[in-house]
Length: 166
Image 1 (cartoon, helix red, strand yellow):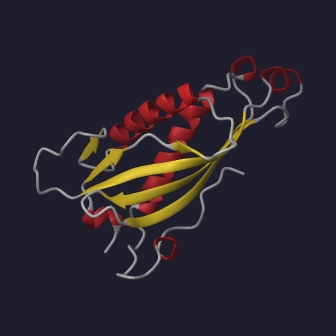
Image 2 (cartoon, rainbow, N blue to C red):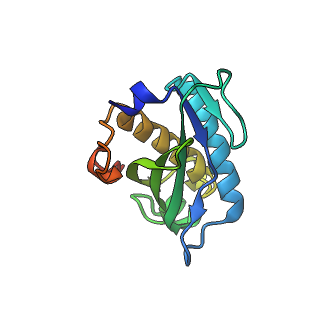
């Protein structure tokens, strides 16, 4: 069985921030909103839900997409603009978890890394949340076709290889 076969609906939860990581809390709101938007546009799931929302058909199985921001480096817009070539890049790394909403059991886990190296006039660091949301959705597209672990098998044993743009 794959994630795609079992779960026609996804709930996008707000991510956590690992202790000691200086990820701005307001970026979490933007990241969640951008991830919701990107997932809806991707049409990977029949329904994309916010926490507390229920699918149209109450019998529909829902997987929760949640995660933890493990690393954040805001970078320097000035360095991106003046130097380029990756100088001053903004970095964000997260551990994604796909959790069965009914049972609370983690069914798949995945690492995602993103890096913003440029953009118009060096690009704003906040834009990394939009870029990272796209990265998350690209990871979801791959993971949706991954085999779910057998009962008792660790969630990380079944998923796809880590996603990175490096």
